[in-house]
Every structure is written in C-alpha cells, then in structure tokens.
Amino acid sequence: MASSSTAPFMYLALTLLSSFLTLTAANFYQDFDITWGDGRGKMLNNGDLLSLSLDKASGSGFQSKNEFLFGKIDMQLKLVPGNSAGTATAYYLSSKGSAWDEIDFEFLGNLSGDPYILHTNVFSQGKGNREQQFYLWFDPTTDFHTYSILWNPQRIIFSVDGTPIREFKNSESIGVAFPKNQPMRLYSSLWNADDWATRGGLVKTDWSQAPFSASYRNFKADDCIWSSGASSCTSSSSTTTNSWFSQELDTTNQDRLKWVQKNYMIYNYCTDAKRFPQGLPPECNTS
Ligand SMILES: *[C@@H]1O[C@H](CO)[C@@H](O)[C@H](O)[C@H]1NC(C)=O
Image 1 (tube, rainbow, N blue to C red):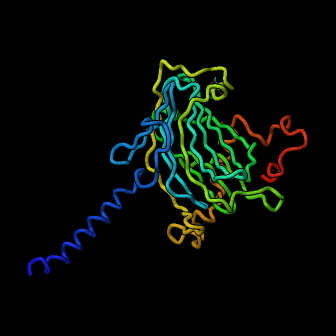
Image 2 (image 1 turned 90 degrees about the vertical axis):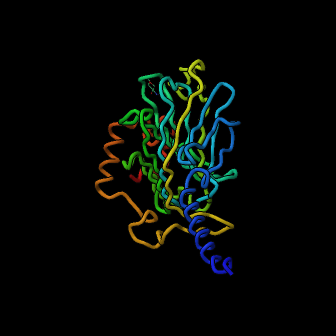
Image 3 (image 1 turned 30 degrees about the vertical axis):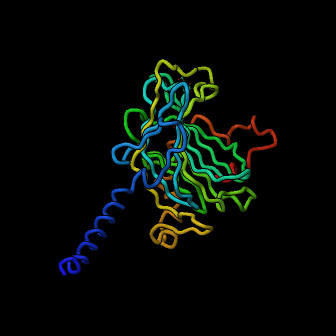
C-alpha cells in the first residue's frame, strides 16, 4: 500500500532530478567529443571547461556531437600564453566531402610579447582562398574572450567580444557559391604549425616550453540542428524577425567593423591584386 502511494512522488522526484541533470549537463560533455590527442584534450570542472594541449608528440582536438545548418555560435577561448610561436589553435565549422563548406577562425601564436594573428577564411564548395587576418586589440592569452560565428542564409559574420571583424555576404546573385546546403560540425584543435604559422614559418616552436595549452568555456549556440536529413532550429528563431536567422549589421556595428578593419586588419585577400592577376574575386567588389 505504502509503496503504491509513494510511487507518484518517486516518479516526480526522479523526473525533477533528471531534468536538473539535463540542465547541469548542458556543457562540454553533452555537446562535444574529444576526438584526438590521446588524453591531451580534457573536460574539467564537471564539463564547464575544456582544455587542449600540445607537446612534441601530438596536439589534440574536439568536435561537436551535433551538425548545424545555420547558427549563431559563441565560445570563449583563452589561448596559449607566453612563447606560443609555432602553435596554431583552430576553431571552425566544416562540412564533409570534396566540395565542403568551412568557416574558420585560426589563432597563430607568437613569441612572448609579440602579437597573435587571428586568421579567418570562408570555403564554399571546396573553394577557399578568402583569407583575412587581424591583430587583436587585447592580449588573448591572459583572459577568456568570446569568438562568435553568425551563419545565416544571407551572411556570415565573425565577431570578437561582440565586435564584428568580418562579414562574408551571400553573393550568389553574382555567381559566388555560399554555404547553405551542407550541415557543418564545430571543430577545434591545437597543433604544431611551425612550418608556416609564425612570421610565415621563420619562428619555430620552442619545445622546451611544452606542453602548450588552450582553454575553452561557455559554449552557446542558437542554431538549427541537423538530424536525419532535416533541421530543427532553437526557439522560433527562424521565423522571428531580428533574430540571428535574419540578423544583419546595423549602422553601429558597420562602424565597428570598419574600425577593426582600418586599425587591426593586416591581410585582406580582396586587396591582394598580385595574387589574383585575372581580377579580384567577384565578392570583393560588393562591399
Ligand atoms: C609575430 O610578431 C611579429 C613581429 O612583431 C609580427 O610580424 C607577426 O605578424 C606576429 N604574428 C605571427 C603569427 O607571426
């Protein structure tokens, strides 16, 4: 008798407990898998923090469990401090196959006191060659900073601490492929790129400083999750006006973008006429 009358309460308690667990598990354990590095990638603090490390034998990396078709993705990163020359921390979205799409952030380390380069690129249908590079207006190794990708059907916006640094617009109307049909996963890795990363490969990794490590926290995504051939978007975002799904840069943010591009951009494929003797890529003439 007693057990049958307590059963509903037990059920309620278990339901509450499991929803509590789901909430607290909304973290790296829930959203990511460490995919390589043989123990060099770790989820810490109950999954609130993730760290990658690199030594002479190997780097490490992780990837999202979900695939997305459009999304607004935020992550906080703290990069390899001190002498990080030769190291590269990649943080990007990518689809699969030979005609893949990709949206890249990549952080190229440097000697102590010399600036990191934030390298960005966009691939559509397997074609990239759209690099833009920046210095940052802060030291990215002393604190966590937020790096965001907004990807909707009209544009891709890269932001740093909420400040847009790059916009790649959908230019399909002038024949430029835009990533919009292939779901992408989020990937990150810390690896040795001393053949090209620092001053074009001149400065090599100093292995006496190893292991190198970078940390991640506060992953947030408003996204359309792709599952068995269909996508479902978080909240009613895809229909709400002004949501990330139709978001564009207002005039304030256009000004901030210009400020970054004027003061911190160190390379722009769109102004590299030597590299494109047949003429700059068509999307370069639209902004
Ligand atoms: C490293 O520092 C040098 C010297 O200031 C600079 O030219 C270079 O752009 C910096 N960043 C990288 C990743 O090489």
